Amino acid sequence: MIVEKTELKDCFIIKPKIFQDQRGYFFESFNKELFKLTIGKEINFVQDNESFSSKGVLRGLHFQKGEFAQAKLVRVVKGKVLDVAVDIRENSPTFGMHISEELSEDNKKQLFIPRGFAHGFIVLSENAVFSYKCDNYYNKDSESGIIYNDKDLNIDWKLDHKDFIISEKDLQLQSLEKSLC
Image (cartoon, rainbow, N blue to C red):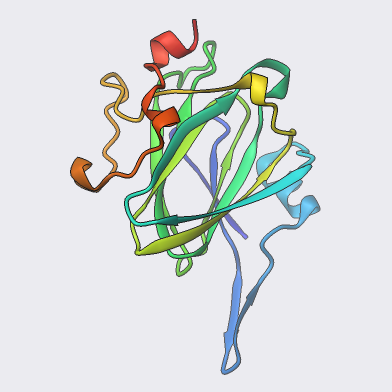
C-alpha cells in the first residue's frame, strides 16, 4: 500500500498493491492494521455504502454535523469519477481548501477523508459504481452540505455545467460560509 499526503491536513490518497497475472488481478482493498499504521490513528468503520450513477451525476458536497460527523474511505469499483474533499474544520490550517482526485476502476486509488470535511464527486465515465466506508452511522437530522458551485471554493468539476445532473436537494445547498453558520 502506497500512501500519499495531500495538500489538506489528515486527508490521504491510498494506492493498493495490485497482483496481476493471466487470471486477472487481486488487491487488498482494506486492512485495518495497515490502515491504522498508514494514517497514524485508528478508524473504526461501521457502515459501507455504494452508489450507482450515470455520467454527469454530481453528488455533494455533503457532510454530517456534530457528533454524527463521518470519516470516509472512498473508491470506485466501476467507471471513473472526480472526487472532491473540502476541509471545513474551522481551526484547521487548510480550512476552506479543497482537493480533487480522479478515482477509477483502473487506478484503484482510494481517498481517505477525515471527519470535518465535505465530500462530493462527479461521474466522468458513462456510469460508475462508487463505494465508501464510514466511521459513523448516517443521521438524517445531521446532514448538511455546500453548494457545488460555491464561488469561494471555485471547484473545477471537469465537465461542462450543462451536462451536470444534480438532485433538487443538492441544488438547494448553501455556500461554505452559510453552511457553517
